[in-house]
Amino acid sequence: MKVPRVGIIGIGQSEFKARRPDANYPELVREAVTIAMKDCKRELDEIEAVVYSLAPDALLGIGNAERLGVDAVGARNKRFMRINTGGSTGISSLAAAHSHIAAGACDLVLVAGADKVGECGDSQTILNKIWDPVYERPLPLGTITMLAMSAVRYMHKYGMTEEDMAAIVVKNRAHAALNPKAHLRTPTTIEEVMHSRMISWPIKLFDSCPQSSGGCAMVLASEQYIKDNKLDAVWITGVAHCTESYFIGDRMGNGYIADHADSQAMGEACQRAYKMAGVIDPTKQIDVAELYSPFSNTEFHAIEGAGLAKLGQAPGMLKDGHFKLGGPTPVNPSGGVLCTNAIAVTAMVRVAETALQVWGRAGGHQVKGAKRGIASGNGGDHQFFGAMVVEA
Amino acid sequence: MELMTRTENWNITYRHALGETASYFYAQIRDKQQIYGRRDAKSGRVLVPPRAFSDETLEPTKEWVPVGPEGTIECFTIVYEAFNNLPDPPYAFGYVLLKGADTAIGGYFKGIDLKDGAKAAKQLAVGTPVITRFAKERVGDALDFWFELQG
Image 1 (cartoon, rainbow over the protein chains, first blue to last red):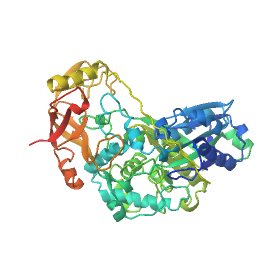
Image 2: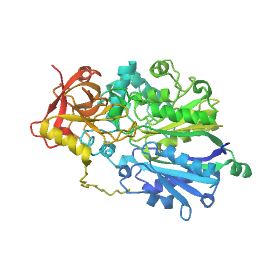
Image 3: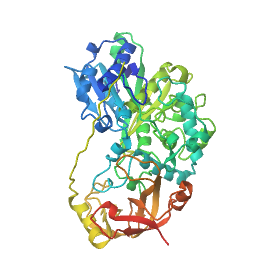
Image 4: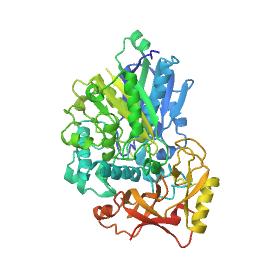
């Protein structure tokens, strides 16, 4: 069966900052929507459906905040649904929008959301609550400690060092300095990262993403609509998800299927997306990658999951300059999640940035000649993974 | 112009049912200082903490298997940052593969000097043997036990 092509015609990102005291939550969503609608030169009246990108309610402090969002996205009398797969929410929302169009149900779909993580004060208090109250809640688990333990296993398995982790931060901060939308834009050095305060060994302050506030919106359209209206577009040619089971302790011990060191289910999601897009060798066919990675160490297993390096080889290739702007396969030229994390839309920004790259519209952080890219999103306790291939 | 804010606080109490499997698990820890897993008949793997069904074979588990008290460290972290509503730092915790188990269970690591992170991390390296210790006063909770280095 030939899948109808779905295009991206509009992209809107607000600037991402720690706080946005000038805009409340629906106003921030509205800001991103306005930019995206202007970008594709469409009116909100034309939008047939809205997929609303909203991660755990407590990060925002508003229960089911999609209710407030309805007005911000102009969804009255339209199809509307909220998607939440934790950190991967943004890419899951895009997958739902893609399905609306690929199924022939709609021609024009808006995906939008925002987050104000900076207002919650302490996201790890909330993220501790994603653990099962029966066995694991009494432990001080959070996303930082969970991924620090992944770092420990990756170090044990492949010999990654704290300096290798710092090199990811240096690369991504240098990229973010070129991206006016990014939250952390100050370049740094290995020494500065190594001297930043220890949070959860081996993750230090500079190895960690910020708590960002900001919004993102994208407009997707059918190929027919794009042709009829003579619009410019880039194309989603591969879309896939894959899921890991819940218990972290099952990703170690004896006879496990996936190692908590690696990102096996994310790799499966990417392979499914590549298959749909006809990508056989991502090392040769992928020009740019925007991979969800909230901590420096997780970018290594994300690179490997995306098939851009063999298991355990990403740190060495990073040292050789493989993943920086100007290298063979730039990873996170926007600065990535490490420099900007407004959780509800973070995985949408990965796709938006990939789209801008293959469109040739990424500005100062443009990857020269990029025609095909991969974007990914991670959610849950390293559990829900989405991937998209975007092409010019 | 002056930009204003409002402060809100969520404070909600839940009383979660543990179910039959976890209730038995915690009663054995409280009354007998013994950790149990459940064997998945199809794969033969012993799941710790015990699950009523296997997430791998999707079959109900049928047999209780005593595990530990010896084990080996599978992963760890040492937290130096204070987070609201979480313990005062520093503290170390992680996952341990208990003797007779096939999956790892989470718990604190105690009795280790955590002042120097790099030094403590070496002591907690993956594969390090540990022993389970039980609290004198046990209430039937995941904090009734923790791990210490063997020897």
